[in-house]
Length: 225
Image (tube, rainbow, N blue to C red; front, top):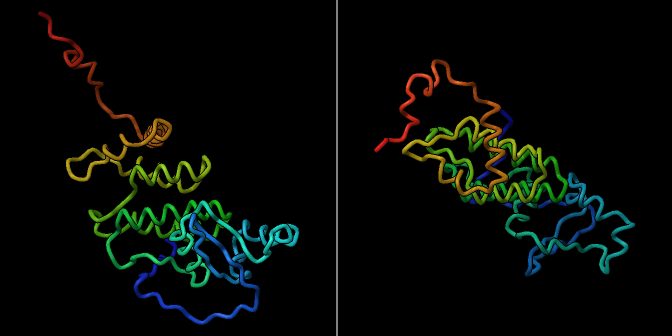
């Protein structure tokens, strides 16, 4: 397993960093929260920002050192900027997994998809896998219907993050009395349910022994008056 890149956000401390490059002002969200990021850092692994900072595109903006991500969440972009500078994800590493933390990671993955940053997506994936492997097993958190919606609307078919969710369904999902999965499964869209079923069928081996309709036909009969 890859090294877990999560770090406790409460213990994160800023360090003085000098990169000798322009500062890019990135306005994020409806209220245009501004993040000042060194251009060299911003373009280190994001093809989106590399393209945006090229002369032919930068020269078309009123301020070549300003960019806008008006449809994104500042909280999610803050996670990205922290990772750019420190190589860590500011999450609650030492606490047991939670739906809130996983939701942040799923949104971060979608942001990485948008920014064309494979390194960031892989870092987020490592963190998500860590939550799926958490010990003890009973504390593990996988995903909510909202997380599924976030991923299916923000990533293309065949995306690795979709595969993680599909594999979790195929390998782990159950309908036990304690923490059963049916509530989550039923809340997903028809499109997703079809993919869930395909994942289960691809993994499943048919039961051995006699089929129930072969030795107990009464299961399929209605009581006659």
